[in-house]
Image 1 (cartoon, helix red, strand yellow):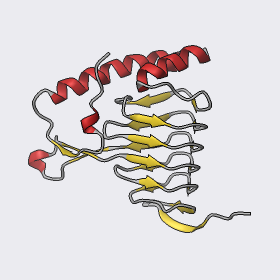
Image 2 (cartoon, rainbow, N blue to C red):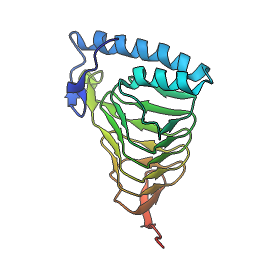
Image 3 (cartoon, one colour):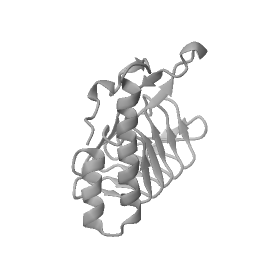
Image 4 (tube, rainbow, N blue to C red):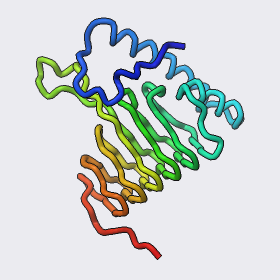
Length: 187
């Protein structure tokens, strides 16, 4: 198995030259092969074993990733306890994705930690910024979280939202781009 590239987590601007593209492409190819197996098996023990290789760390026994699941890199995703990731989610994790305990990720959610340089002469270069989903956050169906965004503790992101900025703890956001609607109702 190729070795993860931890120096790329939250690295900011990265030149897409030299040996880096080949290293990343080797990991992406292996991840793709593991995802095919994960998404085609119904045996929970086999899926967990495949996820351990895919994420390069065991998925906590209290956490669930429902297939189909897609990720381009896999090894830069960290998942806490009691996390639920629903079907058809896609993670672009080269820049790092952190999902803390008790987070809920709705179906078809995309977490994106990779962007590109604005300058057309360097557009192929990467801009890597980690995504962080804090404890107890809930992302509704079909949410997109852009690079560098943190979703605060217990926050709720409404279905279909595109999150371009950090979301404060204990708030409800929705829309494109996501805007704060109100604080969480707590009883």
